[in-house]
Figure 1 (tube, rainbow, N blue to C red):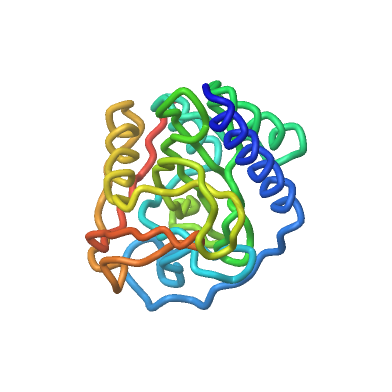
Figure 2: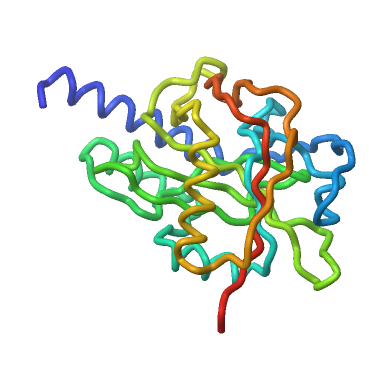
Length: 236
């Protein structure tokens, strides 16, 4: 690595560390309820997007699962995904160092996004390169409402991180996502189905009003507007 590239990597790492520490103090924002749709009762007031701590529209909601928290974690473990570490000083230092040194970090933390007025309840990822700069990942929020079987809905936003760069909207360091968010949604459903963890899944057509948009970092995305809903079946 040349001197210039090393200096550039160190600069990005410091920005990444600063962004992680700033996230420790972020406050949640709320989002108005969406129109009613059929399915799990929580979908009746389901938002279509996450929001950032500053109130900007974040990643699009594109996947959901029905089941308990234990079932959710067991399903992702069986599918080869890793639970993300929380954002702390230690994990912020580690992810910054691993970006510079190009070392894998399967449990790297993810930044906070908000649904129903609170940050994600769970997050999972799957490494896609030799550092935390590239990864498949998804955040989930557990619905306060349950269905007739007493099962909550886990509303999720799945995206693929392509690289680390400065945000066009905030000026801070952030991951840049791939615009093909449907591909990540489909991968998530396929991975969990192949692992034998789903009783089945269905689609909510026209879940999103617009076929394209931008997330909180200004990254563009496009979608077929559908929400995938999987029903977890973890055999005990």
